[in-house]
Image: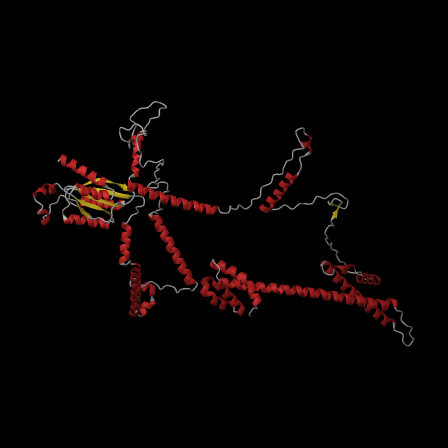
Length: 622
């Protein structure tokens, strides 16, 4: 039998709670399907079939609970209708009692107070018939009184329903009639009706009893922590408001003139920023940035003009020792720029000297060591395997839930030739050729999907180049690593190519200066690239090997000794703030001045000085 929409909506909260308990999460689709089955009036079997795709094996238990809740709701509605029947029955009893009372009153008037008219002898009633009439009347009165007493006893058991009828005039009349007739009425046990004790208050508003004594009422104590804290807070405030006791006032140390303020917690108000505060901060930051830019420009200009070299004057010590408090006519730092025979400023015309003081620009260090160093978190092999298992388990669980809810079809069984008979069973026996073809098609499909996934993940040629370059390039924000090598003879084209190609592949910058017996190779880059290039220059390339190139043979027999002892040595390695050279290129320098000018152009002439000094020392040792 179908249910109305109102009753179906009353069952919705219970169905939602049951679905959440069975599935572990709320699912509106299952709730709607269950309410639809109940509203259409389907039986248990059909409802189970409708909900089986959503709940699988737990569909039977869920349907049983659903129909039990439906039966309980129907019983509760039946109990409500039963209460209405009880009220109607009590009303009928009341009406019957009033009708019986009226009949007894009428009968009483007929028997007691109405005198019968005189009858003639011909119309007189025989004594036997008169006794019969009298007995019938008494019997009816007795039955009516018993019925009334029974009704009264039922009403006494329910004091809330027509309780005032127990002391009515109709009942008193009925009992008087029974006593007059000599009939004992049925005994009715009187039940005490509990009534609330009247509340009596005295003039002060205190609760007192009938004798006038004060009654201590039981105070309700709160049980929640918040309410208990509120009561204690109120009691503490009352204690603070109370004035000092009489004992304290009676002491000689109490001064009534001193006012004791009540301790109060200050209210926390809003704190507003002054107007223009953040504008001032922004202006200060902009001014600081402009000042830093100006200082950098001044430092660059001073470096180009050579003014910063005047700071070396502080290293000069005075030639004459002066006594305490004696002031020299010419300071020692002024004597450095004045003629040697000058003793006073009166005879000298100072050109370009003003009262301005040069303040060197402050330069921040190339490497900031205040930054916190953060170390990466590396997992062990066991932790990596555990994390991989958890990830795969979550993915499989999500796929199973989608299959269970019907969002995606279940995956096909993974059949191979080796497990063909175990998976398919009787189907493989019936038509083995067809089953084998089907299995091979599945295997080809899986192989194709695997290859397509690999092709989708495969990097393009540009991406591979970018990945390789990103791997080789290093972060040089903390400084550039520089290495200087010196080679006696670098005329071999093959070795030249190796030096240039490796520097380009490792993204190194620098220069190669070719000079007689002093061939310098300078490379700049990261620490990893420097390590590989150092291994190339000092180990991999065999510098002492002889070659039969025509170019080398034409240089004459003077270079034979240098070819025999050709080698590569490390001159210097260190760090700098930034790169000084661009892409590695070869520079032929016939003279020493030309080679030094080439390095001086890039601000690294000390590389040439150091390599040349080592070469001279090595020649003297030989």
